[in-house]
Image (tube, rainbow, N blue to C red; front, side, top):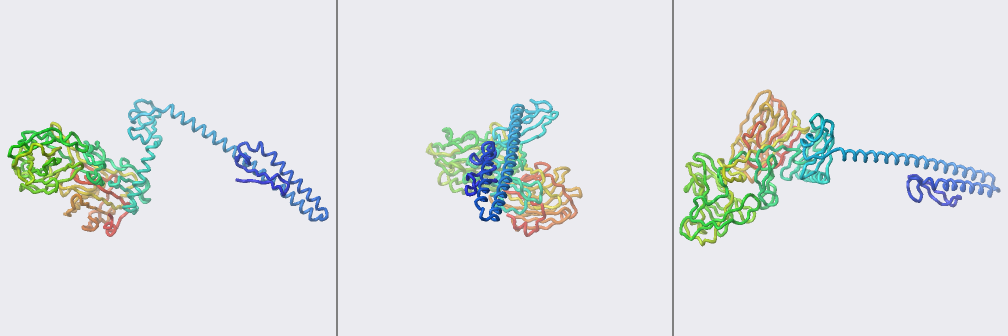
Length: 599
């Protein structure tokens, strides 16, 4: 801001003039109309004062001449300053007029878009309702975080612009906060892809060597393919159903701690009516519903031993021949006076069974073919019991015997105390998976597949990858942890949970077997690998517990257009049963010592 003051000691009136829009001193915004003449008068007054001073100094003509010259110079400087102010005022006025015109144009354009561009809930709806050349907007409920503008180009939607709503801006800020927190915890070593499934923090870059540049939401980074919904424990301690093709984030049902994304193979609940317990039961009363279950489907059923001194058991129909098969059975229950229950999966004396103390969690195997029996506490006093083993004989029923406090199978009940039973599940596999609801016929839950498609973060020449998982029991040694490749013509590199490596490339295929023994849930297993195209390959499991240097890439190239977790690109084969916790991709070769330090 420029200003000029006319001091009273030089004959001025003491006023100050500025080149801004100040209501008291400014020349801008029309101020010159009222202040220009007074300012010029001040200049003349100061000149007159200089002249009078020169005349008063007649006894020193030389000094008076000097004073007059100085006064004349001051007068000229004042005129120069005034001219500058006038130029600034003119420029400011022109800029203001231009800005007002631009604002009016923008307003008119916005009004035109608002009145001429209709809003739809999907691209297909917008295309159906518009003709070639028309513009339309799409806003998706219920989140409504973004508005996308498209143009109908001969029946195809051409993206034009995108705008974030207030909800969208808030969501972006949450994405950034989560990513910052995750990078602080895990470290920023120049990774170009970062996926923290525990914190739901995601980011990547458009230029591999520039590090993480964008904080993103999960659906912008990962693509989940699962053709059915699934049930998982939510953060609020309730069993919730996750829609198809959606990551299944699960939390510890009691503590609420994040466990990661639950990745599971295809499985079927063979129990046709998972919540029916009165099929040929013995020695039981069924007074009605049990206590409400937190979330889920349907309601628990209360079973109460009668007063007869006998065995008291509920049954569920096993409709398939399980002889010679790995089987797993799970159910949910809550003590209502009785804390012990014995389970026989394949028949009255089935060879997969255990006696369970629900309060202590102690499981005593009662059959030679039982492999595992676990009790998991759930909210509101419920428990999930899981048993698995190899069935050496067939059996058409699952039996659940209530035991008294001394562990006896035969006793007389008080016809008041009992157990709430809920959601039985029989699977032909080595371990139980997440609950699958049935209501009249067996039902299947489809396998998970998670892809991250290449979008600028990849480097086909060399890279390092870190994956952190928590595996549940069951499955095969060659279940897959991570797959890199093109996803076409079987071009890929696959890492199994045992540390096996398979490479299929245009230069031929190669395989390196291994037999690492990864820890099972709730422990975690980390895999870190680095390779160069037609060069080195190194891998460290569990931060150096198991390290390997292989020549598997010494003569091979590998295109990268996607990364797959928990299975292979080419189909749902060897699907890992467990939790995906963290993924980082580094666009450079990391030496073995650095791979071992990743965590």
